[in-house]
Image (cartoon, rainbow, N blue to C red):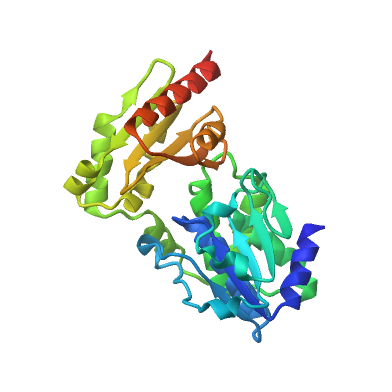
Length: 315
């Protein structure tokens, strides 16, 4: 069983380096950091590191370690919450001795020497808590900081337990995590509080979204619009779900112009959209996916595909 093999590998290696996907969200950082804290608390003599680019809006959760290449020698590498290898943050993951994938996205890229993929899990953070439960007999122990990070990851990927991915197991694990000592109100504030310019951009989105007869909606955020509101492309991540409460919208896409690419953020309240994301250099969940295109002409193709998916779903 993969979980047992992962537990055995963690116990065998003295140096463990944990990666996750680029442009991290609370689940990426929660599972990555929660696993680090779990291992360090359980086995204090091990060297455990988390790597990847920093995400300023989520720095209250955890900060990344800065390590040299030689530390990868004879190290175990664990990639959390990452569906395909090109999206792993910090390309040095291949320098290690062994690579483990722990993820809850569809297994489009079965990379690694060991894989544990559970698409029924609400989040990878939920899976890390399950790893802890399986590893108790092997000496795994959970501390307050690990519980804080795993709870943050679960909250983030379930939309505060509102998304369909939330299961009885999710609630059970969450109830056990809140028995640990950490500041839940501060955690919610850190994840969901918005700066005033982000709120103003949300107002722009609510005023400028399109809505087709099929229930497909789209919004375009150009560099000029982002500059007007004083925002960087990465900061728009907090606004991806803005259209979810609008009556009549079945699925939506937000296009965000970056330096050399147009980011495609897809969300749905019914039809599966991850195949569309895969068509445009991306992937993700059936209800939440991301992709990227290079031209505005390609965004029109994405809109056409999304409209067709909505039309078939509501037919």
